[in-house]
Amino acid sequence: MSARPQPSRRLFLGMAATAPLAASGVLTLGAGTAHAADSAYVMCYFTESTSLGLGTDYGLHLAVSTDSLNWTPLNQNNPVVTPTAGALGLRDPFLMRKQDGTFVVIATDLKGTDWSYNSQYIHVWDSADLRTFTGYRRLKLHDMTTHSWAPEAFWDAGRGQYAVIYSSVNSSGHNVIMVNYTRDFVTASSPQVFFDPGYDVIDGNMAVGVNGYNYLFYKKNQTLVSARSTSLDPGSFTEYSAGVAHGGTEAPTVFKSLTSNTWYLWGDTYTPNGVFYAWQTSNLASGTWTALDQKTYTQPVNSKHCGIATITTAEYNNLLTKWGSPAWNRLKSYNYPSRYVRHADYKARIDEYPFDLYTDSEWKLVPGLADSAGVSFQSVNYPTRYLRHYSYALQLDVNDGTSTFAGDATFYRTAGLADSSWASFRSYNNPTRYIRHAGYVLRIDPISTTGERQDATFRVGY
Image (cartoon, rainbow, N blue to C red; front, side, top):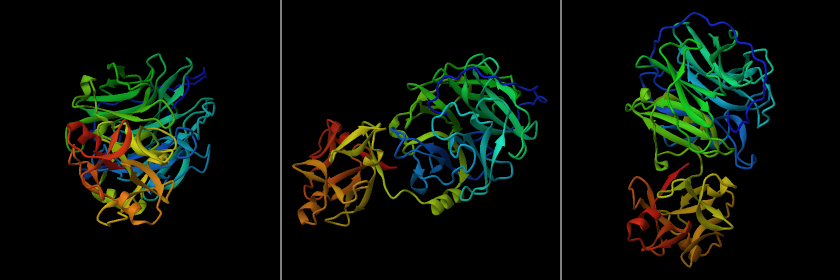
């Protein structure tokens, strides 16, 4: 979940544990079973904007990535499916590849931020390929007057069933991680307490069968911490790490790289239109994580509480074919990677995400108005306006059709002056000058120093 208050006291009755399980199985990503051919990643999420207005949507969103760090939102960052029962919205979606190779999606039954809404159900969809979603239903987890927040699932080989874990309030009045078992995500066993350390915990995320241990990650006091066990038995996990945070952080998502021994931990800040932060480790058992430089990763715009799984190259390509990549881009600053190029009062600048309106930072990179070999930046929310320089400062103006405007609004994309894998933009009619930021304001200047090269380098992404 995201941006939730502390729970009030509610009654929840747990059930006796089922038969114990020896640690078995190998986790590749999230809690699912990855195919040997998996070579890419898919993310599910919902969206919230700063003002809970434009850009807020409580449906299922998807994005894809080849490196698990930089993401391409699908369907123009619009939902691919939306609940039609319960609260008519979702939070905290999670997707998993099942044992038969198909996918299941589960999610919190909640639309918006009415934390007093107590649903005994979670949303469920089946999908063969994440291009179509079938069998929509809600799965009942308990009979108590409490919530069923942030459901996730993993395959419990010893029981021959899937375990669905989620956050609910127990008889002591604080959130614990509960578990139900299911073979089909249609009916489920009675609930049990999976993890109760004696204080409030939410947002459970599992890594199963890693060098003899099973790991449970969760939010404790706005920090992401973890527990571990040599079995998957309810009640067997013991906290072992001090945890990480960037401000108030929740919604841990842990997964392993497909190309190295690196594990990644994503977390979500405790606000609407929050920001994802990421950490990495090569040893889960150490409990020690190193923060990643924000230059290395970019979340889908407005995304909240994500889940990540692996997919094949064919599935990656098919998803892009089905849903399409965005018709717009965002430009991230190289030396201020929390900031994006946007217009404000028709002036061009870099500001820290998130901000209203987020669409101020979305641009269509169209063929250059003065030379189609170049590029012009067309505003998404003011489509008659383009970025152009005027007295060397960049501003957003209406295209008046003149050759002067066309020249001022045309730039040549080059390899990034500070990093060749990024991009820089040279002025068409002032070819010794490049777009750069100075005091967070964009202008065109000659570039000579290391600092100026960094100011003039941007990542073109989403």
